[in-house]
Image 1 (spheres, rainbow, N blue to C red):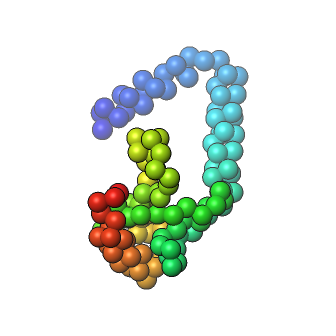
Image 2: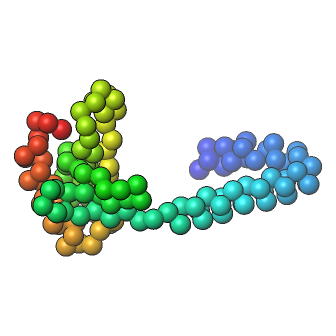
Image 3: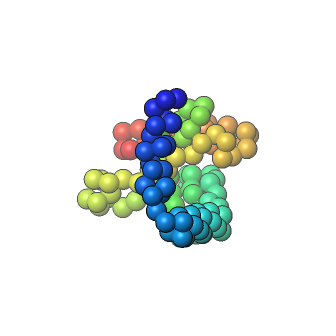
Length: 126
């Protein structure tokens, strides 16, 4: 507790020496930036995950993304984006993390079951 209190004082000390006008301006601009970022995050379209005959997919604003699952457990699913076999995707693959609380209980159980099967099918390729 002593460390967090001293760190907070150390961080806030420069603001204490600023003139009052600068402090008020800084906090107003900081508050506006936080509100703007929260507004942008709130307005982002929600992504949806599902299963069809071709496998698992993630539907986002930029289109449909096919997924192969790399890891599946009771808390999270980790999926790798299915993409063309380019050098860039081998060096820097895209992974998606799906948490248990992002879906309803039945949907997550179904997706976890599919992920286990998909992991067995594509285990060596991922």
